[in-house]
Length: 273
Image 1 (cartoon, rainbow, N blue to C red):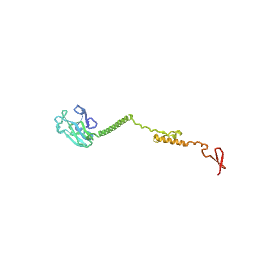
Image 2 (image 1 turned 60 degrees about the vertical axis):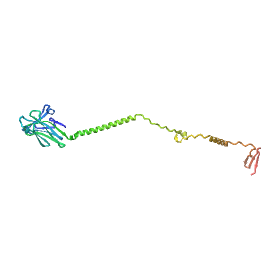
Image 3 (image 1 turned 120 degrees about the horizontal axis):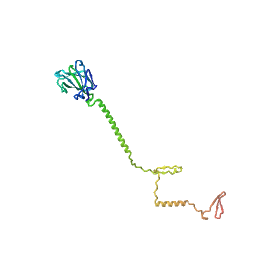
């Protein structure tokens, strides 16, 4: 709860008021007074605030033998409504012929208010020491400014925390990416050059799936059959030797005048057509 001391400029004094530095009896060692005489009856002190509570501590001086319980009064106005405070009993005092009082106004509407302290009957002296008040929104625990500051601070803290978490995460990811990993390498398929392209000076490779697999060696029976067949084929392809003389039919020669037969002696015999 804020406390406003008597010399604070938030308290506005009208009329003849005097400020004093006193002993430790008063708050912050200061006090302000006005004499409520006939020439100073309009003196007052006012304080504007926005909130739900206000209280003031003041003192009233009196002379010994005065009827302090009935004659000394002070008037406190809240938003223009008069509330007279009459000293009906002697309050604890800190000096001879001095009594203190503490006036409070609670349950005010949460809006701007004005407190006015002024003389009542013109025969006493009023001292103002300090004023307490509850700012607007403090009933909920915090004022609007404090709530706004808390919200902004919370948002800033959350943003900082989120940024810090992201930074930590990126740092861990970076560390993990720097560790070498073992990745198995699959064997490459062996490819053979395409013989047809060699003559062009370009070697191309056919997929391994097109490579002919070597055939199995033929069995012994198959080998013998193939050998016999090859031998027969070679014999059939070999040129036949010339016929022996006299062992075959005499050769015949076709000429323009007919067919001639050549005997072993070389004589020609013409055959009739």
